[in-house]
Length: 185
Image (cartoon, rainbow, N blue to C red; front, side, top):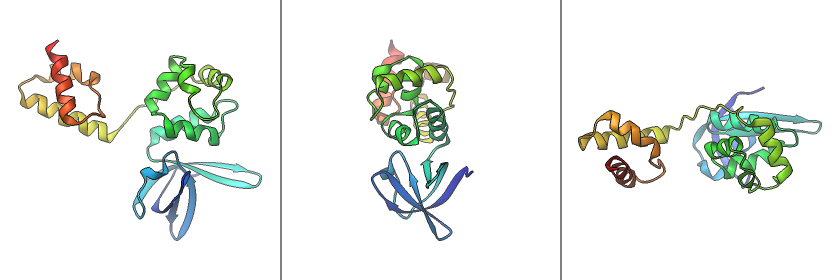
């Protein structure tokens, strides 16, 4: 089994990328192929599916995605081809939250996931997924936000209380506004 491939993306298709390693191009199915750039080198965590007449590679940019994918495919009736669209359209934290809160509606929004399979996912995985999220972009965003708030005279303890409530996908300006509103409450 392979843990990861480190190579250059030479082709991007709607469901996969071609990752070149040592002169060999590997077709790797990925959740969001267009998040990769041509001619850039990536480390891609790999799941290998071997069947009678096929060997398929499924790849993920971050280890947390890979680990969640492994948990999903352990569910009876949910193979890699069904789990990949879940990974493509849902966030890791959103998927885990939906499973732990038994949110069948959220899970059935994914392609080919009906109510029966959604219930099976919840039954098999509820409170069993403990994936530590390490998102470097979010960490950088948090550090930047802390720096700005400290420069405005707020203490680290005060800042740490409100940061979890601030949306990290917002612009820094909006994060600062949101944090200031929360601190003034």
